Length: 457
Image 1 (cartoon, rainbow, N blue to C red):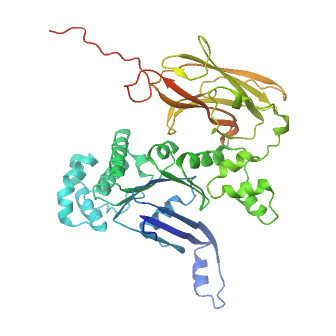
Image 2 (tube, rainbow, N blue to C red):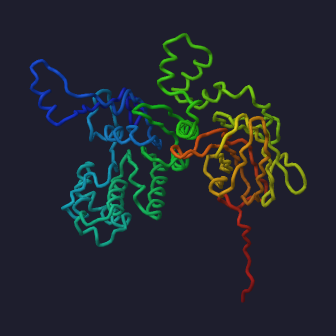
Image 3 (cartoon, helix red, strand yellow):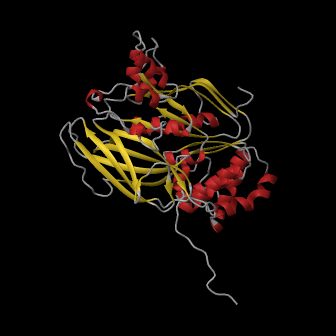
């Protein structure tokens, strides 16, 4: 284990034996010829990463990708088939709902039981017990059997016990999704306090916004393997691209493995490089089947274009130009606080595509969503045009933001009943949006607030 790591995972794998019938276990156990009657399911395979002290790392991925299995092995509640896990420091974990609780015990008794499992003495628990009860906010129910608790009360007490155990490492597996919004806010405030105190946090979530807001690094787990790891923004883009990307534009892991068996072209080299954490960048460079029919992309020549935009999709319908204008003419150097803004988008149909969705998103520099809207949610029908046609899309909005730096993202997707939507041309952080104005306020929204003293004595 690296001396600079709180958690070090090396070559971790977990296999399960799957038997078709219960009797097959007995037949295999007593088989004279050592015949096997099972198939092997690999839940996790060759997973390696390190978490440094003080880091907050988020793990994202679809259901069944091995996220919970990974956390259980890090916590030591599940034995790996192969590989190693090394942990340095006191570890507290909040895994599946109610794990470690005895339903016949009261909340108070379960607090002492959980604390003992974490290696905390009874004297320490007694000193912290009132803090645990106040954080959990379950009142007199702490004296009742936990079998009478709701799922939210389970989470409150379990999380309160874990964070008040003063752990060096906190591991959370999606459990916070059960709590109400007030408790979730309290939990994330405690996350921030722990981060400032240099604690290490590893948590699983389906919310990419939480990963963007709270994590210093992220890991995208799919089919038991790491597909991407690194900066949250990059990993989230890889995850969303895989989730919503067109099947014909996104190579599968199998395709990438097959390409390794033949002499690599330059494009193949780029694709293979993506497996190490830059999948999105390599796919962006892959040639599109319709690219020969597209007009010249004029976006890079326009004012406030962001050369570090992230573009993906099959581009059957492509965004190839934009223009920004205010009441007094074109916008070139930035935006004024409270300014009325118009954004004209030029879109080209390389193919006739039905059921299109056009979306508009504004985000802060660190990736937090300020505002988002799309034609599907607003019940606006997007014209379906023949191949070779162009359409102008106009967005009008008020720059009701406090001074700062923001980005505008524009996306075109195809509504799909099985996958929600399929990326056609998504241009994340396409336009850099610096907002000028008097400093002093904080947040993102400009409410036009005034402060006055209309009368006094």
